[in-house]
Amino acid sequence: MSLAFSPRRALLALGAVLALGVAPVMAQTPPAPAVATTPDSLSRIIGEGRLRVGVRADYSPWGFRNPTGAFQGMEVEMARDVGRTLGVTVEFVPVVASNRMQFLAQGQIDLMIATMSDTAERRGTVGIVHPNYYSSGYNVLLPKSVTVREWEQLRGRQLCAIQGAWYNRPATERFGAEVTAFTGIAEVETALTQRRCLGWIYDDNLIAVMLADPSGRWRDWHMPLPSQSDTPWGLAVRLDDLNRPWGRFMSGMVAQWHRSGQLLDWEKAAGIAESAYLRRMHDALKDFLP
Amino acid sequence: MAEFFRELRTTTGLNFTIFYDPFDARRFGYAFLMTCKLSVLSVVLSLIIGVAGAFAQGARFAPLRWVVAGYIAFFRNTPPLVQMYFFFFALGAITPTVPDDIGMEVPMVSSFTWALVALSLFAGAFNVEIFRSGIEAVPRSTVEAAESLGYSRLGAYRAVVLPLAFRVCLPSLNNNLVNLVKTTTLAYAIGVPEMLYVANQIWSDSLNVTEMMNVLLLLYIGLVTLLVWIMHRWERALRMPGYGT
Image 1 (cartoon, chains in turn orange, purple):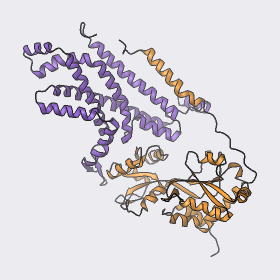
Image 2: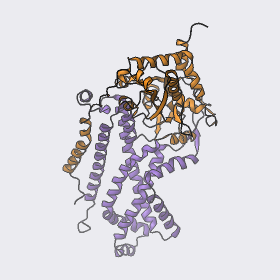
Image 3: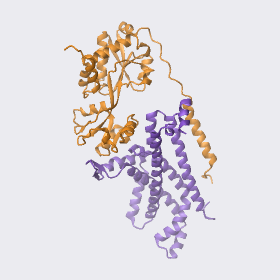
Image 4: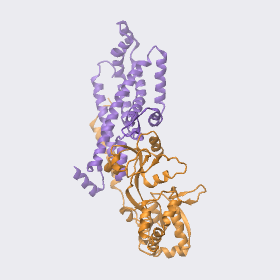
């Protein structure tokens, strides 16, 4: 009978799977090297009178398009301030997480301010400017009726999350929370309202934005625990610009923003709750004279 | 073993975290058991639904027949993923809740239970039709012979019709059960930690999509091969000389 089980056929299927699946891994090639740039990007930008900046168009309130189509947000304000300081016009180029480093390395943009976390791996591809201008970690959105003080109190509790988020694992591994992850934000919100989980484990900045929502949608929710795994964000120039005038100039811009408290002001204007990182940096760098 | 896979990662870049990272190994192990549990329970429940539904289809009481027809129409004509969402998010919203130890209202029906219900009803609808095909293949004269020996309708169904029908419909039943085992992956959408769900989480953490895809494929080939082997053994054990092929 043709439906009969045959060990030989199973082996053939296994072979086909391995050949199809594993081969592409072995054939992976290293990323293409960055294109060479002109010796001094800073004088070129001033000479051309324009600065091309890669920003997010989909990440409200850091970088997004408002209903008229114009770029808006905290990072967009930062870019405009760079343009004002240099006396050049700013051109915005929308980038997403998966292409932002390539846009910069290939020379389509000269500066990237696009909600990028600063990691050792990324420092090998683009020139991440220091000091960092922002920082984010993960936290839990909880109903106001739940008044926990420590993460350990969440042990064994159900928390909702988005599938694939990097913090789902540490939340389980370090604090013993039971994470139920859904495919999208709408499913998580529905599960939350149906009480399928105690809270929502999510990016702490995004929780802060939700809590500040003027519609009052999250009025009965709060974020009582300290954020975890705080990872600074970095704006970036091309790797070979990092220790040349352009990179050093941008370092000075970020330091000045921290010193003057400008980043705190922009954050407030964007409707985000004050982040501990910006307060800490401002306190460290602010003018010691009264 | 853990050393070998760690070595494999450094030499070839093939990153099978589930073989050397205890955290990944544990959660993937649980996921495998979850897939097995979901498969076995939904296969058993769908078979019960199939047998009972096929019997009810032949009932003299018309409204019972209409209920079965409506059930088949609903579950056979809608995608299983939509059913899963429907049960979990739509019906889940109106099921009773119980307060837990800190006063939170928690739904009584878990996502696993909803997945099991959705999968069993989905495959059960097909099983009813599969059993019907077998029942209709049993000659009318055989049923009449049983009745003339004093069998009731249920008695004839249990002792004569079903055993014969079973042998006729086993090959198509095989097909449906194989499909059911593969459909358990849809439970990932409502957060049941079965193999696809956990593999997705692992490859998001370790960026080893290709490796985990291969592991998934091999495990599903293994599970389905095992099911087909069991069903084939059963088919052979039930073989009657001179009946069917």
